[in-house]
Length: 212
Ligand SMILES: C[S@@+](CC[C@H](N)C(=O)[O-])C[C@H]1O[C@@H](n2cnc3c(N)ncnc32)[C@H](O)[C@@H]1O
Image 1 (tube, helix red, strand yellow):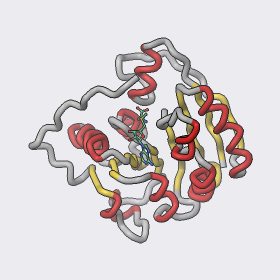
Image 2 (cartoon, protein in one colour):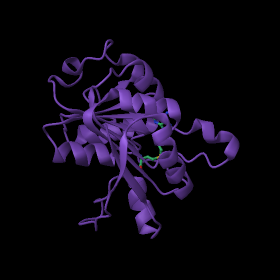
Image 3 (cartoon, helix red, strand yellow):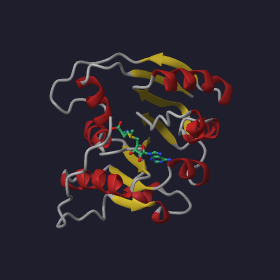
Image 4 (cartoon, protein in one colour):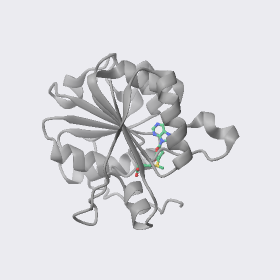
């Protein structure tokens, strides 16, 4: 399934409170300057159109959410969604999540890491481009707080099984805990746009949670 063209962002919308490029992130890592407070932080890798960021941040105003998205136009689209709703506790960052995890996010600083429907890189010779790789999983373990969770959902059974086998080799996260499917209560009541699309096509979604 390909991706449709994104609707245009209203040029009058001020994205300055919700959009950053990776190079503009505070160095060293500083939550106070990012969100104006210190609160539990959850990071989403590959936030796409930002459905998870907007729903989760509104459901949990006591937490902060950072979506890292490598595509400039998707990161800006997610930021526009957050800006339109004036959500104070969520931002979209344009950059490579693997690099930001490795070089920028400190040890024991995250309450949760979310990876939903990462690009599958179907061809065997491209598999090393997958985000759920050994180095990233080690960074997830390092950056999670004790008790923090890794959420991983995909529609690709092979990617799911490979990752479930890789996690115990790469790190000491415990799991997988199974995650139940929920019936949606409205048209956008899905974890992400890719979950919505997969479920509307009546295809299976593979979900797991791991804990540090
Ligand atoms: C298949 S889409 C899924 C988007 C969203 N998570 C969802 O479920 O609707 C995967 C997203 O991950 C992004 N992505 C891929 N590699 C990335 C990386 N290294 N860092 C940040 N984002 C990445 C892609 O640009 C794309 O938007």
